Length: 151
Image (cartoon, rainbow, N blue to C red; front, side, top):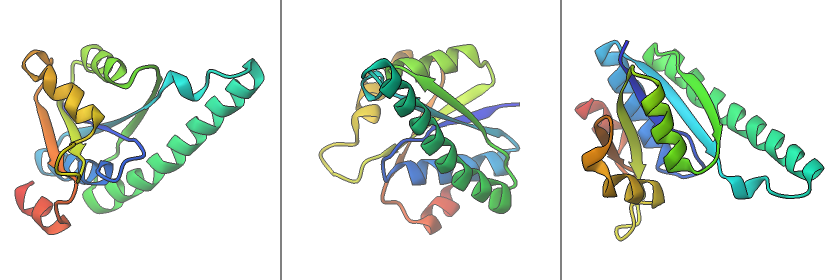
């Protein structure tokens, strides 16, 4: 089954990327994989403190995921899966796309600041020509109604 890969992070634009991926998946009978990457700088502390911080980050990600997953299941009939990685976000996202041959589209949310779409979008678009799958960038301030129209 073809899957949409969407990134779960602490950005506001992540919400529209999630909505878009779920709506498109529902309409095309596809799946959704949600990836969240814990950057290395978040847990490079004293060994014991680092382990606690890593576990807290995972708990926060899982709680955040459950909110999106419930909405996807209840409203769109899509049951997403969660992948949590540790490392540099772009590298981990690309590794997952390479590992999972069913991922057909990478969905990212663009920041609402007109001059800066966000670090992830900026980095991914620089290498868009060599990405292993199409990249869909969803405007962060697009309305729910407009998203429903285009999906």
